[in-house]
Length: 234
Image (cartoon, one colour):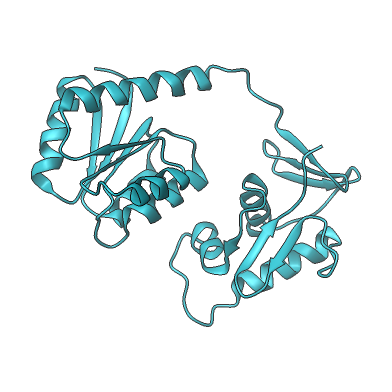
């Protein structure tokens, strides 16, 4: 039995069984999810070394699932889909997928691609661990090991949610997050109409950081959409 665990998110039970049985015979440990939401829940609960995602999924489509996974992890992510249009492939890859396998495909081809991405990921994992402290313009420091944020060496007393908001945006600089995306990722539940939670927490975060809304150093408002981190690493 190989140590690698693979998550397969596929709504067609026959295809899932064929892929799952083949990869189990190849020695992989398999988990199957039949909906996008189920796949997302499984991914958050367990540690996987690779994820296979179909695009046409109930409850949460494959594009959304890919985006959610990539925001939380750099695990190899392969789209397996019957959709052959170039724009679908481009969209999937732009959301962070590492490969796009078009149905129908041979099981040997799929296995070869999986092994290739796992080898690459394992080499990446074997690199020296970078410093846990990241420095940004304006003397902002984020220490992910100690979960500390400092400005000019002074610790900023953030709540857990404020810290997670800052870290999520800082990990994806210049990416605009909608308020709904931020809420769903940090609070791990669907956003609801009229929910003002993100506004309240971002305002508090900015106050603690000494941010000026009209002259931001780190968190910029994208009017009508949400927020993005604009700090530059030093």
